[in-house]
Image (cartoon, rainbow, N blue to C red; front, side, top):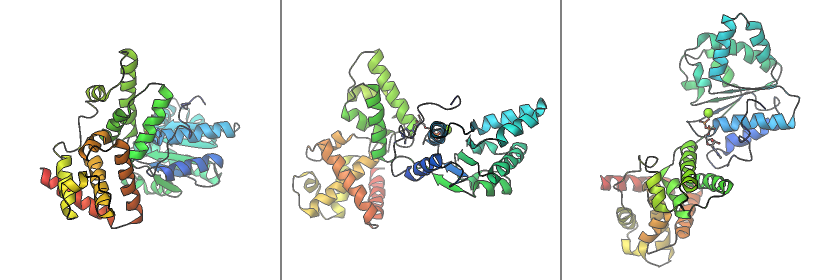
Length: 343
Ligand code: ADP
Ligand code: MG
């Protein structure tokens, strides 16, 4: 499809807790356009995969239903085209084009803010398509309720169908995304470098990709093997806004140990009794959440443990949080205390 990027497919989209609702909705829509979740609005912050998902719907429908007329457009292009059609007196063509789509995909509808006439036009397009059971999907960088100056009638149209959000990816999802892109590149990147990227770039997938792209380019153009040192050096601008720098693993161990009436030494020791190993895993989890150390570095601070042991510990705590509602508040409370202690 001329307007869609080939790489934006469901196969290339890594699913995690943060995006599974939106991703599964997108897949369902692509299988049965117009019959289920209509309209669908996917919202979330920058670089979280909105464009990837909405274009994946287009690419999938294009494959499965070649006869359907798919229109993908950004809200900005729609607006410019609309203005141009007024200027050139080709409004009928404009209306015809959009009101005869089978699948209309509009990216970044927050651009509608303060565009009264475009809102009016989209309202009529919406009604024409909706009445004919044509699929519409929109993306937005915030919930529709937060777009200023959106007419109530258009707002209520957007809110009529399914509204799903994309959240920032968890450590595990970031890791899976990087692994997949590294495999595709054919370049070898050491485990510790991958961990460094995952622990320092936390809020958006676009930055994660950009950091990796830079590292791969470095390996290719300078013909050097990537090491953790090179990773830190080359990605220092990406890592420039690190987590609170002054938090040490030492303080984390001290605070966690004292909460459980243990000593820091217990956490570093090899002892595996339940009374020690779970607090130890909590300390590992917090270390990974609030410091910029890689899991390899964290392992060294926990009596020379392997990075996979740290990963495993973190996963166990994350899993327990899902089943035990008291755990998350407790960990958050500990993190607050650790931050206070570190200022
Ligand atoms: P948005 O439109 O929300 O700002 P994009 O869809 O442009 O974000 O995503 C930014 C980049 O991150 C794209 O290259 C996209 O392919 C990639 N990306 C985002 N989420 C995922 C994911 N879950 N799996 C794989 N790649 C992703
Ligand atoms: Mg986008």
